[in-house]
Length: 425
Ligand code: EPU
Image 1 (cartoon, rainbow, N blue to C red):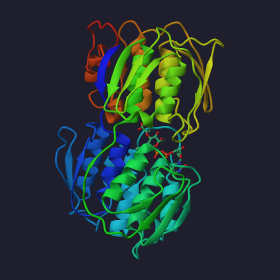
Image 2 (image 1 turned 180 degrees about the vertical axis):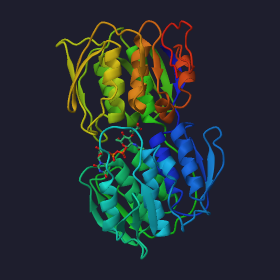
Image 3 (image 1 turned 30 degrees about the vertical axis):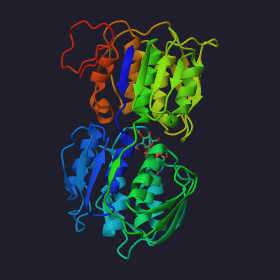
Image 4 (image 1 turned 90 degrees about the horizontal axis):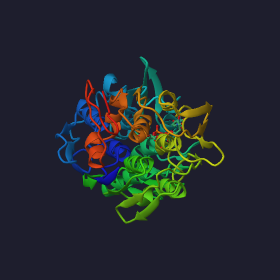
């Protein structure tokens, strides 16, 4: 691959920021929203709760949350089951309406994904949990109060949900062992722009002085570091050279380190990265972890690069520590000829000289993109089905791949020969 592609706004920052518009009634203008399925579903969630939403155009949408119906603070089940991030409306609804009701969220299947830390945090702030017809009802009719919350794990979603509840609670909340991901910090900056008083964003402990009056704002979402890593891995895996623009390289330094160790030449600017890859990458093992460690969302992308890398020991190890089941991509990669063994949260990749084309199914957003990264190196046409996973997380995927010189098409019947990869639905 060769060429230049711009990165979209961050999905995982956009979703909590959309949720946070519930915190104070009024009209918000949001820029750099990525045009992808999850954002559209989240806008529908807000509409179903009573907000007025303008269509997303060139990355900008307006959301007016004046009409949020507090009498029925429950997003529709069918939307919640599509996307895990819909659970993020709980904190803002609880703070604004004194009540929230949500069914167990859906989303990518990465093993057990409980929300016990979110719920325990709400309870510490004075809410009561009431089981109700298979849904989770959280009640804080007498209002939320500040609390000292020590998260057992630096959960991204729990930190975000509790941050949004805490700005609406009376008094001071401390979230200890908070997630430090850039998306959490972006949500915090958005709340600060709305008038919230928050100290320690990006640090282990976040201190929120709740109860400050909040107002709607205009805001620009940060670029998507996971998309950036996806295209860098695509360039790296094809021995390519190119530039990704409109990104924040300081948000994915661990991936850059791994790419460099694997033999890529990198030039890093403030908002762009240029990469020149060797014909065959060196194999680099890694362990995922909470930010700033290697992102779990980048893991399937790098695994694809490993499948045909040069490994002096004959193998390399990936240790996944975030999710109990985040090797969904292994089975389809093996169908393409990869040699990978998984034992619990450890994957042992024995690189082979080349993978072969085939028809495989995407299993989740990042695993699906990992398959695209693998397919791009395979001579011939590889078909990837279950594309809704990719559409949830990647905007203009085929356009961007084609801008880099790949042949990538969404089609119901991809029979025409393609030089590098076809993405079929
Ligand atoms: N966990 C609990 N209890 C909780 C919350 C989390 O046990 O109450 C556990 C989870 O089961 C998991 C670990 O903690 O094992 C980490 O989960 P976390 O809450 O940090 O993840 P998340 O908020 O569910 C977000 C992203 C994911 C990304 C992870 C980790 C969004 C919408 N999703 O999920 O992104 O992988 O953080 O960085 O922000 C994706 O974009 O494809 C994606 C899956």
